[in-house]
Length: 476
Image 1 (cartoon, rainbow, N blue to C red):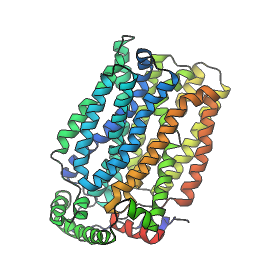
Image 2: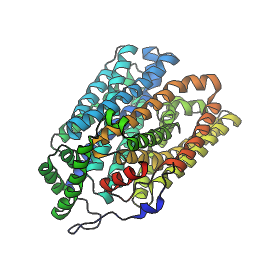
Image 3: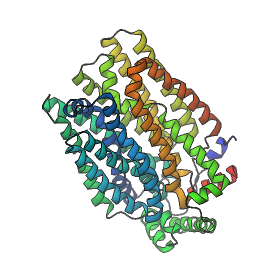
């Protein structure tokens, strides 16, 4: 089935009387800032292992297998956290779930910091993974449901900006702590403990944030939903939007959309779910997290000294942040699907060149800086196009009553793909070499380009309710 319909994407979102063009209230900005601390923690906890791992390897006596387990245990936890977090978010509310995730972030970071050995470290990283997976689902859904249609792309992708900012913070603090601590034992513990601070900020901040108005409407709490909408819309627009949201909530309630049974029994949802799975896999098979988790090792293998690789790796964090700013700007001006295509083409070409440079150039400064230039190019396309579009589309395409659950199931596929890549990468490099490893990702990238071209729908320019009606019709 071909689900393309780019022409429809030019439909302008409705602007109701009383709204200034692209109006975003101060309250909406505060809500976005606080909620995206979940993204900051997501980024820091996935990125910190990049610089902590070489020091942890010596202190904990890690083998290639246990090194992969320490890295990928977070990803396995994230897969479980995504589906459980999505289900809890639909059942208990987005806000309450984010509060729970803040507690898990704190406990996981503290446990990893104090871990006396490999087993405790793996468990602590798994707990962090539960929080990361839950945040990867709940925060984008919360932002999508509270945002005006014309600002949804920009506001949801603020979470992606906070993710890459968290990764940059991790890379920078790793380099600073390594420089100050040198070869002293336990320097990696200082790298890990920093994550407890934003976890505390997230918990206290969400105590005073409102619940998602669309979740409230799905529970039949229409007056509460209206009160929240009035905080972030003009009164006229809040009334008009509540009418649209309420009508669809009643229809979803009549169809009992909201769980596994409904997913299996509803053909259009099953087809939509497979598209969500594909979008999730496409984001991961670029190999982005080999750069995030093993970037220091890749640069060391290319010719950098250990401390030089830590410092050079900051460039990856900087370009990720700058590219995400560019992605946020582009999402308000161009369609989602072409952005995803361009991102896939760019990352595939960058990975091809990393493999070629690693294969044909001798070890030394020339190869080191060539590989660094290509990792920076790769991240520009990944973080500027693929990642923000992926999380945004997954937060948009599912019906209101099962939005977090549907996104959670898709995120399980995403995190399991991430887990498999993170676990296999060190062994793959050891077995076939770094060049051939990146050539494998090039082949996967070509398959991803074909999938996006054939199956991915356009979602820009609709309210969530209008998009649901369109996808329901298209996949039926």
